[in-house]
Image (cartoon, rainbow, N blue to C red; front, side, top):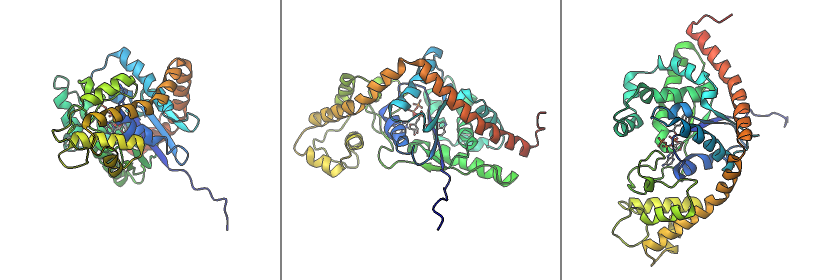
Length: 337
Ligand code: ATP
Ligand code: LTN
């Protein structure tokens, strides 16, 4: 038997917008899971700054957060030697392919996107066309790299479905061009909810600073925010329908400790919400502390971060250029001589 046959690694692509202070929702729903994939897969992780400008950004903040997001990727455990880490706007093929794919995406499909509806409500004075075509740019991100798997939180399922539909449509018109991507959605930490309104997802662009826990928040802030988390008028710590606030805290505690809901219920049997909230706050703060220390060191070395961005963009461009020229040939564009 030939043992030397090597199966090519599957490709993973994902990204986070540098649109605010990253939350434990981004960490548990996305970045933490990415670190477990880096040995088995060919992983490409992007800081999606072009997506971030669909909502008005302060330029200096956007720039700082782009460095910070990359530093968080590395501080959370993504090894720049094993993963391609880059900034979306450094690879212009993302915008080019987004235009092409936009001509194969229907107005009706985009109108059905719940993120567009939610963001139109929260940004009623700036419902720009980028907000509307956001999922097309996301489809371009994914399809440029022959991506097999896309690890995202469950809130992105609908966008991923659309990316698949666009790819299937293009392939059926022009013969096989794109790999059809699959979602890779984690079981635990799928959806971390807001501390202020546990029926809404925790989001880094929430206007209420008490609604979310930032990965880089101080221990005091983390404990204070958990103490204020909205719960219910019951007194027992148990996972049950209608106890959205407690269920969310139990989910967060479970993600950081590995304990099951049953174990958590036993641990806090006979104890009040105050005790439980304090335990969650301390556990989260202590678990994030090593990441924060590493982050602080990385942020002092901008040249190092820029080097990673540059190398990442170089590797990503080589693949992205190939995909775009293949697509342009199929579309009938004259090849530039
Ligand atoms: P914004 O508030 O700016 O729209 P966001 O906080 O929702 O952003 P994104 O940058 O859109 O975050 O998402 C990055 C990744 O984090 C995605 O994979 C998304 O599914 C995941 N994610 C975001 N919020 C949560 C959450 N509350 N629970 C689980 N996963 C989440
Ligand atoms: N829309 C995503 C961020 C994102 C993304 C991607 C995720 C942009 N492009 C490509 C996975 C693959 C979000 O999480 N809000």
